[in-house]
Image (cartoon, rainbow over all chains, first blue to last red; front, side, top):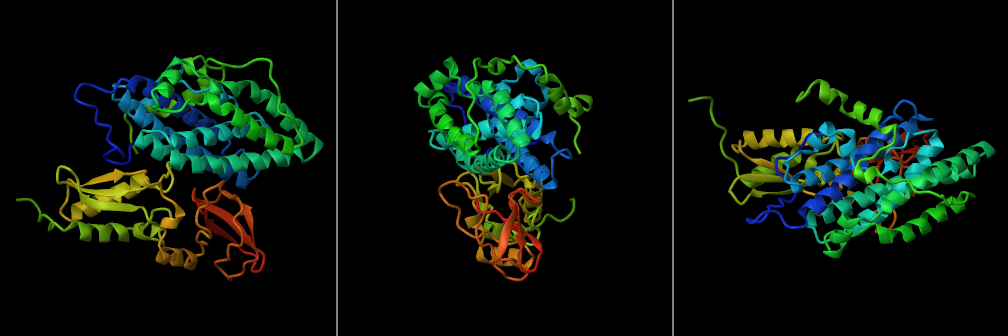
Length: 271
Length: 168
């Protein structure tokens, strides 16, 4: 994750009297979006050499590559906005666990293949909706990011849709696993649409859209896929939260340790 | 005096050389034919800037492309020249030139079939002709191929698999 161009796509150029008032809020929001993409990408990488077929190995690693690409753009911008001057690498490799702000959904262990499909289904439908909204926001750099990223996540969404239906309408065992996977993952989906003070301020000022109003459309779309797979959308009795404020699941530490191990052993190393 | 300083060449000449650079992942096609080279012009401070639009946000070839463009800039007498990554307008397969499409097909990679639709991206492209035998009796094999921008298809006539540059 090193910067590949000399100059960022759009130089934000803070006005002479300091960064705009929305900058800290926007930096935090982009950090959250970037952490979602980075952590999910890192999780998916754990399928490499372990996927059911070589085609799935390629599919999941290609999706992971896209997500890490999204993370790079989002984290780089967050680091420029928050006034600390941290690069995407600094943010990915040097923050401790408690400083990561991803939704807990993205860090869930891969489980069996059905669990990964259920997590992809939930995330990719959310990401398509949110990036589409972002593509129309007032910030030219973020709008460009949204316009490009929504096409990439639409491809991931189709992958998840197809597998949901294949497993749901496959054998009794595959349907059982898919049903179990949806139940496992669903309590973690609410956090993607959570709206706090930061998001309320950003949405009110017209800086970026809030994901909260998209939840209904998301539910409608995933219900269509899950119903088509002969399954039902779970109605969880609880909602997981805490990821946005740095409170993570037990399985998160080892994931971040793996991500950061080389950088911590060889600070500043290049190859 | 150190070694000879390369003659300073104009932006148009730099553009020609940058466009001729091979794509690291698809060396059969030049960066110009791939449609990733934007403007080549002096920036506000008069330093020559080359704009590159990545095909995918996570394109792993960007560092190599950036280094190759910097080499061209240096060889053209612009050692301080810059490479700028631009996202607007986003790259689509429509930006591949007719010559680029011909070269891809000649090297066994089916060029993107349809212009990118506005709606959902189809996972299964319809009737992509086989780059080996020309048959349209092909069927999708996997939406994800050897590189991020390719999917795999299968020709039922000559029974060969082939990559297809996914229309996006």
